[in-house]
Amino acid sequence: MTDLIAELEQAQEGSRELDARVAVEWLYLDCTDEAYVKLPNQYDTEARRGDYWLVQRSGKQLKAAPHYTTNLQDALGLVPEGTYWAVRTTGDTFSALVVPEDQNHRPTYAATPALALTIAALRAWRDKEQEE
Image (tube, rainbow, N blue to C red):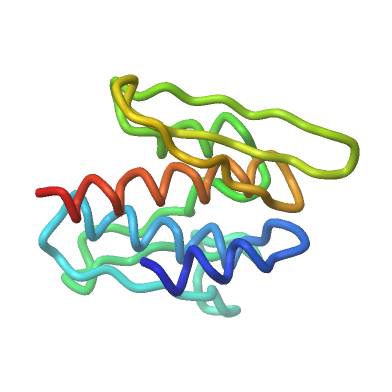
């Protein structure tokens, strides 16, 4: 997850490829079935061209990744329950913070509000996993 966070921090804007990669990381937290990212081709009748999809290796699931890196509502879905979160702007800079209420963390800075919140949420999950 650390490599993905670093890539998100360098991104100048969100993208469907980044959305799919975030969703795969998210699935690894919630399921045992391996997941991978698939770019639809002309033979994928259910997919819209240009969308990235999540597919479980068992073939049981085919769905579009949420727009984590471009939509604040979707990024908010990554925030762990029971945590404090905030998104703010200062000029052209956006920052986000996702922390348990009893802890203090530094804000995350990114090119867009959705990217900042996505990065902050992934860091919170990573930190939570490392504590366990």
